[in-house]
Picture: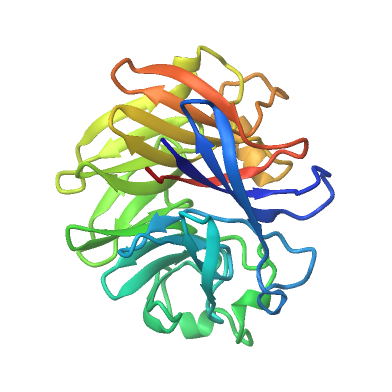
Length: 318
């Protein structure tokens, strides 16, 4: 089995350097990293050389390529060669957190501008769903190219959409700030009130969510009923802070979840309030495998370096 983990890493492991996009191919049966791809965004599409660049949550396109977002660009990756074949960008790209195919288009979440975009495979805009009240045109006066705006400059956010997918005709967007997954067409809503949600990956007719405190929830979007709830803290048997839980893949009875070491930002303070963990105890960036038949924790595979690292997505390559 091979998994593709989309990450941000400080390449030399120095905490003062900016994050850069890294795709790591992992063999969970051997608990090893088999290949990796480092890549940088075109400098014309960033606020500057010190800006963070991360590979966020990817998905397979209909032709077998990987749709890999990287904050201000969308990359088309050949998973066999683990190489970027093509890149597209658009002035509306800011904080791209996920990409999923949608017929003739690609759905992209723009966390920075509270938007879900649908673009064609040349990067031309097809649809723009803005999640806040009021008019988008009035919200960001004077900005013509959001790619050149600092990643944190538009905070605080009202929604912060981090994953979007069309499932059985409905367009769902999972939102960090509202702690819910919103139906943008029919107006449905999946409440995830226990903790801040990420993901929303469709597998087996269900939408699978992570929650940042170390929870996994699988929901039937037709009924809103929960088919599964897991607390990874209980499975690990610890009160330690597990990390920032984000990135999920389901392969049969094997569940893979990304855990990012806590950073010295608002995220760490959010988790300190939400978790019952022992203050100051941090676990490393890693990929966690759960046997759903147990459920039980199978293994934890380290994926960061001395400076940590961020995990955004996990994708089954085969």
